[in-house]
Image (cartoon, rainbow, N blue to C red; front, side, top):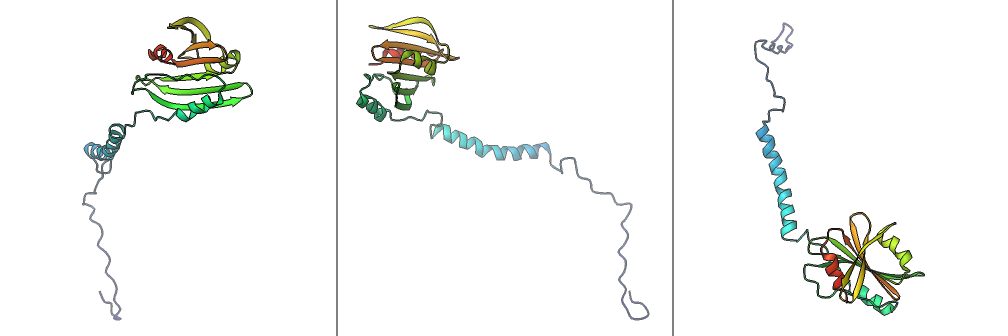
Length: 195
């Protein structure tokens, strides 16, 4: 529109139509529960595939094994006590830890295993005095409850820390302890395999 002086005056924008219906958006921004379920499925599918790959292809649930032989040789070389190791354990047993320590009280060899039922079992061989060793390995108040014979050897059975049982063999110059879960059937067979 042009006024009398030749200056252009812009036209006013038309007023909004009061009768037009406003656009409404739903509570979820226009997304249905189906859309959300599909989005969640798309996110969870790769995670499920990665977990499956880890467990099946990479044996992710299998315990991580260690080579205990260097530690066993170190203990034998120290010649503080005769070292025994389990014999004839199957392939379903896994060695998961191995340490040998020496201090002023004596020397201690600790070997950790996982049995076929995935229960942990620890073998402790030590020249440390039994009275000092037991509270460290079995808890503050271990209690002797029975005995177990494996051929010529007689082991003492102890209730150890909560949920654990132990077999103890006292010999001149060394104490052997086998500690495992209370319900483990492998404890006695493991102790019998030591030679």
